[in-house]
Image 1: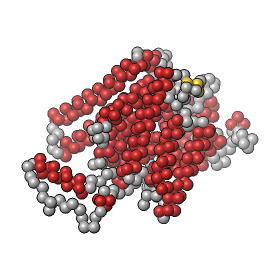
Image 2: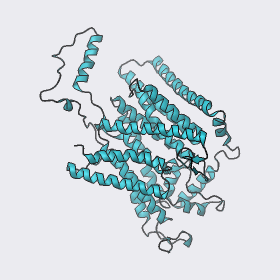
Image 3: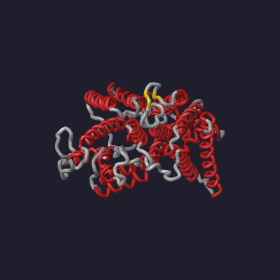
Image 4: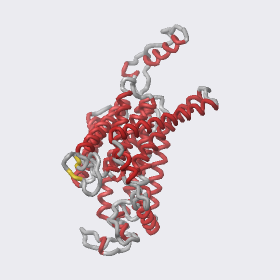
Length: 493
C-alpha cells in the first residue's frame, strides 16, 4: 500500500537535498534549524503512513547501526563521568567546570541533534524508496540538480567569483557556487558525478538520452576542476578509475561465464578500459583548459608550497594523533575538536582549528576507538552490500548502485585531506547515495511476461526459428497487467 504520506516523504527527501545545498551547504544556525525541522516533518509523515497502512515501515539495513552507535557514544560523553577541567571550557549555561567526558558538551548536544536528523533522512530513504519508479525519481532528481548546480556555479565563477549568489562575499575562504568553501563544492560534485557515469557504463540510459547524460557529467567535472581543489581533482581521478575498474570486473565475470575469456582477451579488455579512463580524464582536462584558460590549472599547481606541500596539514594531523593518544577510548567529544586542539598544539595556539582536515583522524579524536570501529563497519558493509547490488540484472539498478558507490568512494578519498562530510548537505547526499547503493531487490525492475515473450521471439527469429504461442503464454489464469509488472522483494535489507 502506497500512502499519500509516503509520497510526501519522498518529496521531502528530494527537497532536503536541494534546499540544504542552496542554503550555503547548511552550515549556519538558521539553515540547520530548517534542516532539523524537515526531519521532524519526515517523522510526522512516517507516523501518518503507519497509521494509514496499519504497519510501521522500517528497513533492516545494517548501515543504520553505526549512526545509532554514534548517538549512543555522544549520549555517554555527556554523562558526568570525567574529571573537572579548567574554567576555560566551562559549560556556559551552568557556569560550572565541565565534568562530562566531552570537553565541549554544548557542541556535543548540537552534533547529536544533527546526527539524529541525518539518521531520520537516511532511515526514511531506506524504508520508502521501495519501488523502481521511486528509485528512478530520486536518482534523476539528484542528477538534474547536480547539472543545474554545476552550470550555475560556473556562470557565477566567470561573472562574480567573489560573491555567492552575487550578494554575499566569502571572507574567510574561497567560495564556489552556493558553498562558502570551494573544497566542499568539489566534494559535492564528486558525490553526484558517479551517478550519470555509472548509468552510462551500465547501459542503464536509453540511447536517446546518453548524450545528455554525458554532457551533464562533463559540466560537473569542469565545475569540479575549476574549484582548483587538489583533493577534489585527485578524488575525481580516483572516481573515474574506480568506475572503469568495476566495469572491467563485470565484463570479466560475464566473459568467464560465457567461456570467452582467454589470455589475449584479458589483456585486450584491461587495455581498452584503461585507455577509455585515460581518454575521459584527458578530455575533461582539455575542456577545462578551453573554458578556464591556463589559469584553471596553473592556480592549482601554484597552491603547492615547496616548503610544505600539505599547507600545514601534517602538523594538524600530528597534533590530532596526540589528542587520540590522550583520549583513546571515547574521544574528546563529538564536535569538541576545536576545544581540544589548542591544548595539544605545540605551536602555542598559532592556529585556531575547527576541523582536523582528515575525517578519519577526527572520527577517532571525537569518538575514540569505539567511533573508529563503527566507521570501519559502515564502510565495509557499504561496499560489500553495494557490490552485491551492482550485480543486478536490472541495468538501471546496476548503474545506480555502481555510480553511488563511486561517488562515496571519491568523497572518502577526499576525506583524507579535507572535511567535506562535515558540511550538512554533503553528509545528507552521502547517506542518500549509500541508501541508493544498498537498497534491496524491491527497487529492481522485474521483466514482465510480455517482455520475456518478445525477447524469446527475437532470439528465435535470430536462429531462423518460428516462435509458438503455445510455448509462450501471454498471461497466467487470473493475472492482471499490474500483477505482471509487480516487483519482488528478493533480498533482505
